[in-house]
Length: 242
Length: 242
DNA sequence: AAAAACCATTTGTCTGACATTTAAAAGTCT
DNA sequence: AGACTTTTAAATGTCAGACAAATGGTTTTT
Image 1 (cartoon, protein in one colour):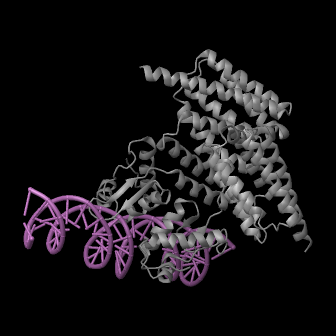
Image 2 (cartoon, protein in one colour):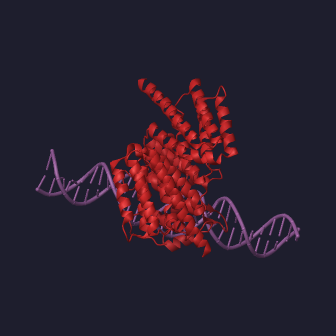
Image 3 (cartoon, chains in turn purple, yellow, green, cyan):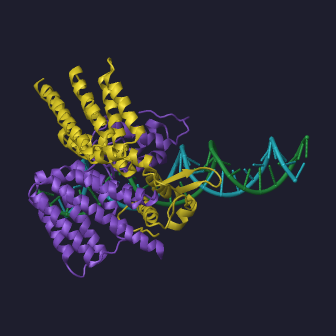
């Protein structure tokens, strides 16, 4: 691991990159302890502060964790699916909010991805996830539910659908798409009639999954997408008029 | 923005979180300049080093960028799709390499997602992306191509397919799934016969996209998935024996 | 043998200094 | 007046050294 003191890049960036490369290449393995900050500052011929800034950059990406005290130090972190989920959700949320992605674009992506999960969920039809889906459908039918709570339940339903595919990589990839849309969805107000239509489609999708009919589930999702987009365009039209 | 000096969490973590919250909530908008490091250290009542470590954490997530010199400082960054892509790819790669995700799981996720793009790509059939696909198919037929180059071309073909859906959110979500698998794919050696089968399927997929037949493209991808998994299982079986 | 005191190591934080970069201000020449 | 050069001030980047706080191990005491 070497750095170039004459490069235009900041030293802390170079050091972070060097360590990151070592992790990705496998030269540093999970749970391995990095040299102490003083040792690293000797190795790289920089001050301890510079090393620390580099380590903080890595910690921000969950690549390392640090522990104080004797036999403490910085350790290569096993990137958990959970860490990856939350990073994914943060990034997706920022992307959507900062890049003015249209509701339609986000919606299209989300439902396309969910339809990809449907056949797998139907093939595996986990009792656990089906129960969650049914429970959320029930909750969505309760009177007095606020729009925000309805949305949250909607997200929970869709997550169960996705997780039901039993593929952690898919769940990870989709976490962002589903969760990041929640703020956008929260702008919609759902009338009693709207809710009825949506829970009806949810039921249709859950039924299809239960009977193992993936393409029926995908068709249900397709209709749900149209419904969602219609609702959203109504909201935007009304807002534009006001 | 307040922090709690008695909390167990490190000060730099708290400060980073406070600023991050301000960005996500919209209190700090894109391209807005943060107070200088000295001002922040006054505000939070901590030293400049601590503020700097917090800022490095945010910079590592592309939430801010810094500029030196007069009228320099830290600015809220507009998260570009490009930044998001590379973060996504790094995270996916680490996830796959550290968590011992099986080839089948990764493969299943990847092709499920790609099949989700197929109908959209077929509906839009951008001339540009189709040309890229054809070019990569041509390249894959060239004799003397190394396995690694064949794989790289394969990735390029699939990226074109995905990008052809014309949905940046989808492209972003899929970048990780497609690129992160490349190291796994590189372990496979492709015989001439294998390559013929694969480029044949690529051609079939490209043809389906060109004629706007999304389900045919999806079916082609399905066959390609089976083929890929068969090749991989042969490699693993051979390796297990040796 | 158990508890307490001590110690060494390591990260976290603080202080103060200097180097480097950069845009704006001031000055100078035509 | 306008174009060019020099100076200046502000900001980040880096360095050095110190102390605080946490933590596991070792030694001493009870």
